[in-house]
Amino acid sequence: MPSGLKSVTLIELLIAIMLLAVVILAINNIDIFSRYQSTSSEQRTKVQNDIARCLEHITKNAANTIGNEEIYGTNTTVYISPDSANTAILSFFTDTNGNGTRDAGGGDYWVSYNYNTTGHTFSYCNQCPNAACAACSGSEEILARDITGFSASKDFTKGNHINITIAACWDPAKACDISNPGFNMTTAVILPSVSTN
Image (cartoon, rainbow, N blue to C red; front, side, top):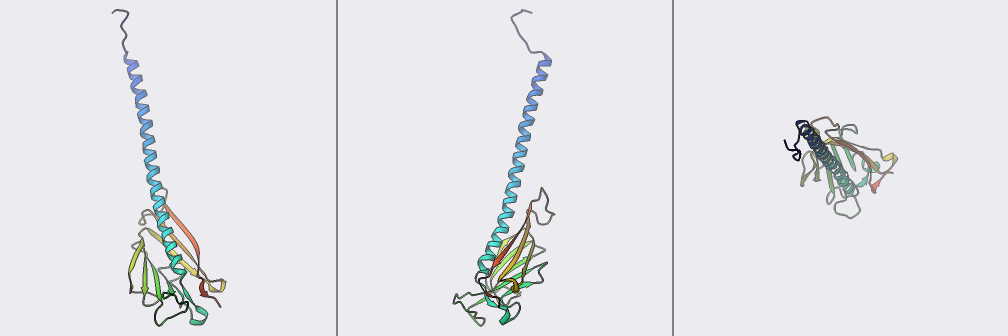
């Protein structure tokens, strides 16, 4: 064999293939990791946005609540059912006509939020015939479809506000964990037109 010719030995070829395989595996791992992070981030963002939207919607409508439960009786301004530990319905008697007075006979009406524990939906009714809102008289809108928990409590002896907690998961049919992100948000909603004495 002439001395000027060079060739690749089998060992050199195997080393080159192994180095190429390591580089390809590293690139593949980076791709898988970045896809997982992107998907996980999108899921977390969607769940947080759903809860924030529901809380913002409640806060906006609660600002129009009007009444005095000392004068008109319990559950005549804010109705929470069945109890503060497992709320299914939260209703507010709102000053719909905007005249600043409580018009129970006409002009003002109840708005309601309903948490469906089996369907994991959280819906809003813009006009109810009564506090329990068994049937929506106006239009009903589903605000979120991934809610796993909803609770509300009121104690007007401590001020004109209610406390609300909403929990949600990416897949509400499964337990929340690292692969099924979930969040729990709590807020106090001020009712400026509700008198507490």
